[in-house]
Structures are given as C-alpha cells and as structure tokens.
Image (cartoon, rainbow, N blue to C red; front, top):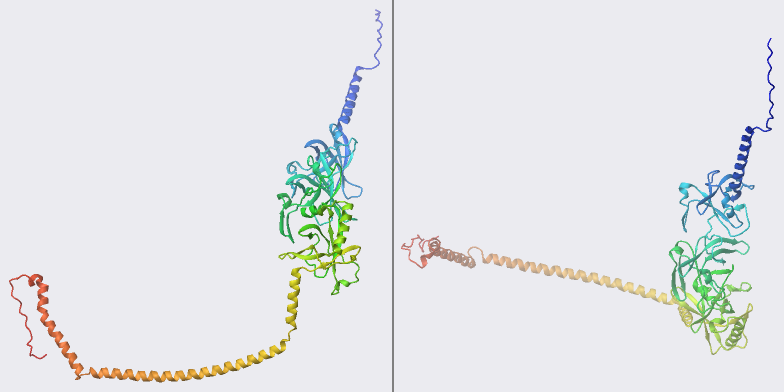
Length: 551
C-alpha cells in the first residue's frame, strides 16, 4: 500500500468589502446627485389667484415674461370661497428673481376693444400668463392676477396722478390723456367712491411730459364732438380720432396764470366739462352776490357770464337758490334769487383774500351809488341770457339788502324787456275792447249786404230775359231780309228774264271767238314757224257754220 502525502493548503485573508458593492454605491450617489440637481434647478412654486380658469390647462399653460417661457402651470383648483380659482405654477430657478412684491401677472388671450386688438398670437399657441417684474426687493410667492394688461409697467418713468369728476363723464381704462394733440398718458384705473359719490381715475403721465403737470394745471374733457349754444353763439369742438371713438382728457395752464410749482408725487385734480370752464376757474378767490329777478330766468344757465361794460368779471354760480321762503316762489310778486360770483383777479386785484376783501368793500360802495344788475339777451337764436352790471344815477340807496347772508345787487329791466312789456300792455288793451257791439253791427251790415246782393241778382236775371228776347226778334228780321234777297236773285236769273238773256248772249259770243281762234292754234301746233316763214302750203280751209244759221 502506497501512502501519498498531500501538501497543506495555503490560507489567504479575504478583503472585508467586495468590489461588487461599489456599483450600488455609485448608483446611489448618482441618484442623489440627480435628485439634488433636479431640486436645485426645478424652481419655486407660486400661487396665482384668478377670477376664472378660462383657457388654462394643467401641465400645458405656460408662464412667460417678455414672450420667454419661465414656468408652467401644474395645478388648478377652486379657492376657499368658490368664487375664483387658484393656480399653482412652477417658476424656473433662473427666473426666481422676478418674483418680488410688486410683480404683476395677468392672463393673455385674444381681445378686441375700442382701444385696439391684442393677444392674436394666442389663437394658435393658446392662452398664457404673463409676468412683469416689479422694482421691489422683497420676495413674494403669492400673487393676484390683474384682469387686464397693465398699461404702465412698474418702474416706468413718469408721474401717477388722480383725477376726479362729479359730472357724468365715462372714462375707461386705456382712454388717452392728450396735450396739444400728443398722447402723453392713459387712464389706468377707475374707482367709484360710494360715500362721496365721486368717480376717481388713476392716471399715468409718461416722461418727459410729466414735467408739464404743475399745481395750476387744469384738466378738461375732450370726448367726442361738443356743441355749445350760449350767449356768445354756437361753438363746435371736435377732438382727435381717438377721442371721437372713445373718450379723452386734455390739460394745460390757463392763459395769464403762473405755471406754479411742479408736481413730483401723486396729487388730485378736477376734470372740467370744457376748456372754457377750466379757464374761467383759473382764479381761486370769489366774491359772491345775489340778484333778485322779477322776470323769468329761463335761458340763464350756470356758468353764464357776468359782465361790466363788456368785460367778463365773473359768472352765474347758481339759479337754484330758493332759500326757505315757505312756498313764496308761486306768488305773483316773488323775485327769483340768482347767485353770481365775481373774481378779483379779473379786474386787476390780487387773487387772494386781501384782494377779495378789497373788491367786496368797493362793490359795497358802488351798490349804494346805484350799481344795478340787468338780465340781457345774449343770443336771440338760443335765448341765452347773461348778467350785465351798469350804473343808474337815480338809484342811490343807504343800505345794502341781504339775502341768505349774501349782499343783494338791485336789478332793473333792459330795453328789450321794456319793449316786450309795452307790447304785452298793448295786446291787453286790445283784449279789453268790448267787441260784442261791433260784432252785432257787423252782422246787421252783412245781412243788408246779402239782401242787396239778392236784389241785384233778380235785376240781372230780368235784364238777361229782355236781352234774349230782343236778340231773338232781330235775328228773325235779318233772316227774312236774307231770304228776300235770295228770292230776288233767283227771279233775276230765271228763264225769260233780261238778266238770263244777257248771260246767254255772252256765252254765245265766247263760243264764236273760240271757233275763230281754232285755225291759228292749229297752225302753231303743226308749224310753229309758219307765222314768220312761208311754208308753201295753203291755209287749210276749215268749214265754218254760216253766221245766220241758227244753233
């Protein structure tokens, strides 16, 4: 038996971790890196509140800025009050700096308005949400979308002001602000204050035209076509093409008024109905009076001129100043109160309280010396009236009357009113005439004239009868004479009468002459030259009837 020896096995120490385990580790690190990369580049989530989700789709509708995609809508849901929608969108990391406090977002979709057409590109690409970056440094992730595109992006150079109007002007967002034909701004927002019952308009004036706005600037309406019929005649004002289709406002500093200090921050301005009205209110101080009118004030409107020797020094402020008179307005002798205002600046005085006080004292003296207010017709076509101030020598008073804490300027009628009054009195005197007696006499005269006309008619009929009878008798006599003449002519030419015999002899003579001329006529017919040359032929003998032969 053979014994074989086997070598001892060599033992080697094994490594603690196999290289195969590196693969899961690497995969884990790659996955973690991908997660981190995805998280670091995915961007932030924002929420946007909208009135409606019309045109929006989850996972499809984009968020854009300057037409560049910066995000996408991920979720759309109703808000807690169920009166709107909340949109959750993911904004790219590189666009997160756009998400600040005053950034603005709005839905872009096709729209056609009077101001123009917008959003036509979305007809093919679909609606999207536009984001406009603000100028704030504070970050924000919750936004409320605007209903319309903002006309002025945040940070635009210019000036924001507020206009207000108590009249029935109807301006809309986007309507133009015009200065001497140039569009220098637009209406951005409209707000109605229910308590004040005043409409406020937020307006933006773009640079460099915002430097035209000063503390003395006046704004007035230039919408459409304006026709003004007043004491001065008819005035037609036509705006630009834009303001004919929509509405608009213009502005400026009235002539003769200082420009004033520039406006550097939001301020409030009134909108006047016209440039004329804005210019008339360029002075701030008023001295107010009341005139008591005996006649009708129909045609006297608020804003009508108050003149002195043809110079406008004020205007009518109110024609509705009936002041606690206990229904006395319907009395025959009631005088209608009219409130007028005069401006010191229009007569060369300072436009301040001192100038107003000086004008008041001077007018007080003039009223006592006979200053009168006359209601005159400015335009016969429109019937517009105005107030004219004049002096009356025989109207000196010692004390100025007061009405509702206003001094009263006495009134007198103008020449046209006097003529109208005289004409009215003349017509009344005619009405007072007793026309009954005149009417009775006239009726009797008409009856007598009727009877006379009947008698004349009867005489005319009798005369016609006589004339007809006489005419008939004359015709009969003439007819008898004519018949007698015809009978006489017939008897003269009857057989056996002398006239008949003479006529018979005349006819026989004419027959004999014709027989004698027959050879001559025959020769002329056959030989025309026979009367001059001898033809060698003897005259043709034509048998004739013996003269003594009876017929």
